[in-house]
Amino acid sequence: MTESQPPKVYYVVFCTTSYASFDEARTQDPAAIAAHIARSQELHAQGVLVMSGAFLDQPQEPLSTMGVLTSRAAAEDYIRNDPFVLKGKVSSWSIREWANMFA
Image 1 (cartoon, rainbow, N blue to C red):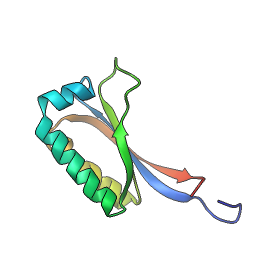
Image 2 (image 1 turned 120 degrees about the horizontal axis):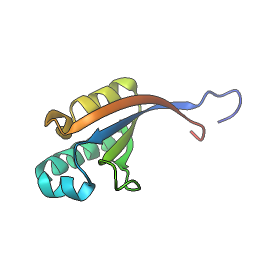
Image 3 (image 1 turned 90 degrees about the vertical axis):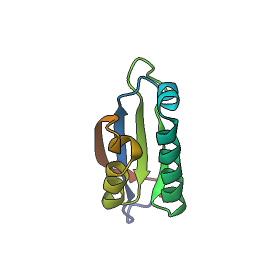
């Protein structure tokens, strides 16, 4: 990015699940994990989902995740149609606009 070039804008989806850990989610709902991963891989292959994953550094907190998407509409679709959201396993979520200074 140069001073004359605006930064590339992405949309970051943050979510907090009702699971205590990633291991708990994997044990209690392997089908939802598989569906979530398959959908994420498909969106990544389409170039819509840049990256996603779970936060692992706060084991005393519920499992939290994030995804970085290329548009607000893609971010909204990503969260609203996520298998864990559809099953009622996401207790809260938000979308934030983010500027990548290296793009």
